Image 1: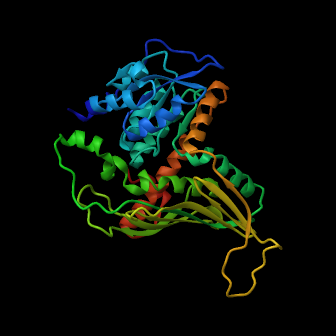
Image 2 (image 1 turned 90 degrees about the vertical axis):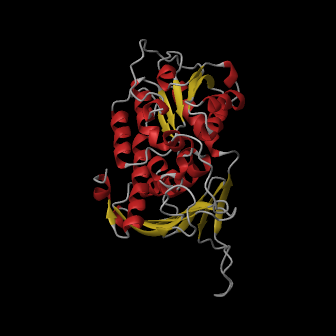
Image 3 (image 1 turned 90 degrees about the horizontal axis):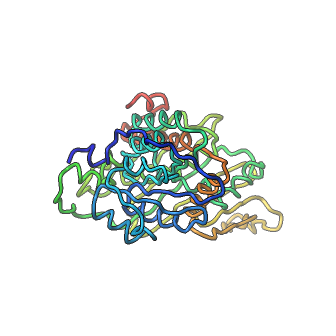
Length: 388
């Protein structure tokens, strides 16, 4: 197989017949990539009141079988090996792109050319060149189409509630933000058995390689970075950081399993990313916004608003228990479901939005942070953009 064949035919031809979406009817969607994430998100999509599954697509027969057996209704819709065949169908209104990250720019561009609504998993690419390709495609997108990315926090009711507290000035002037992305299993000790061509290996096991995943800071930590950008109201102008490998790699070429990045934003705002992998099951995934009047803590399962309240004074200088909690809200469901609901409602209600720029900025900032700890020096946004 060539990489082009593996990627599902990246040179898209325009569909022979353009389609028009009928408002207030169910959105028919296709799943491009029926690996773990495609099955997970695609299954949630089938349960949305405004959506119905129309097709699945993957280049590997075993993954197509997985889509048929694990996505509700997957055995009752057409299955394709070439994404171009799925995109050419006029009855497909929207697509979920859940392919390896390095393929997102090309697959996103193909979906734009086919005039589909797009829900693309994060990140926007693994390289500056790839992200630029995605942004160029987005600039040509039909403005009536919704383009959304898998940065679910932006659509979580709890994150949005915290955002309203922040925007109303209730925690004052924020100059310091933190993102904690601490989680993982035990470190791997041996490489998997290799019984496939290299090109196939890079797709099936894409997460292990910088070329195909961007390393963990792009593949995973971009979520927290996106929140830092959101609350800063901009992308960082530069970054410094440290990182490295605590445990030897038996497979792949990640350059870090831990890193501490400081992002510098306009107006004197700093954002710290603290990331540690291989934590033997321990998790601490959250963001904190420190203001002059209070603090917000955001997570996928809750938000907390802290501040000075008269009813909770400290008893003495040695009593370090926190008594500052003003308000807490807990998530009622997994926030991916919230993001999916927003996606399909925007289509049905004819209120499209395009998140390509914020997704690109989160991905760029992740690449910026990776460059900072790999080069062991300060890296500016402009230098990162020239690093294709």
